[in-house]
Image 1 (cartoon, rainbow, N blue to C red):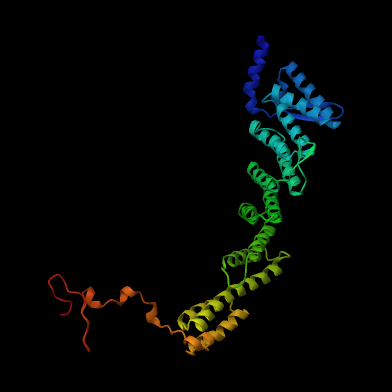
Image 2 (image 1 turned 60 degrees about the vertical axis):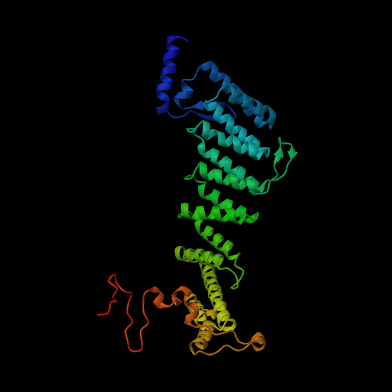
Length: 382
């Protein structure tokens, strides 16, 4: 290597961190051209001509849809010029070809390799769009083709993985919120509710200002509401659905879906109230326990004061407060009424121990009970 060549090489290494990466641009008239960037401008001329020649041959084959030839040339660029801008562009074009041939996993792998090897690649947004396009192709139900010419089995869950990786690669990019939303939508379609909730929740909490956030709130509320099985079952899903509908109405009161969401809030509150009502009725009618019944009936009224369940709870609560015995059912007539509970039934057995066993003495009528004796053997009475 001559002295001048060494100087140029050292200059390239010294200035590379301060310079923009070269951008390869293709036009039908001129082919691939390296524009801008000291790395491209100071590259060894013979090597650059060889790389450009291979890139042009690959693109020509690509335009003619001669996929095998195009991939062969791009692979040669990747093998012979690792770390160069030509390698980055060759990887991107391979991803485009594999996507066109419905080789989805290979396409995504090609696109993902670019930011790993070339973090300053000027076409980073195109890479993310390419990855997103792969995930969307699977989401649309397109069939993958093995080696590009054998129809293969669909893998619907692969799109969920790809949407997550798109968001992880560019969490602040233009496709970040879309990737999470589409993950949620696709997961709902293939009955993966937990994955759907994961996508929607991350969208809501990471991108509160996204125009997709209101849709995610409603989608999550609908998912949880779909799990509600009525007032006789566990109400965890009812509460989750109610919270998301309520948050949606509070945050987006002018959204076209707000009135319908508000109606769902009322319905879910009635379901919660009816759950407490049914428990109260159970304790009153089946266990003859007015104290426990009153607790649940009051909860029913507090949860949804204007609901039909609350009105019915008020009626039963009036009977409890009047100490009205519940009507006998068939079992009551056969086996007798369930014993009425009182406050003593709820006292822990330990507290029923004789006070004398704990150092107290029982007080006689009209006498104040004494506490335990002190160290001198005297009680606390003076």
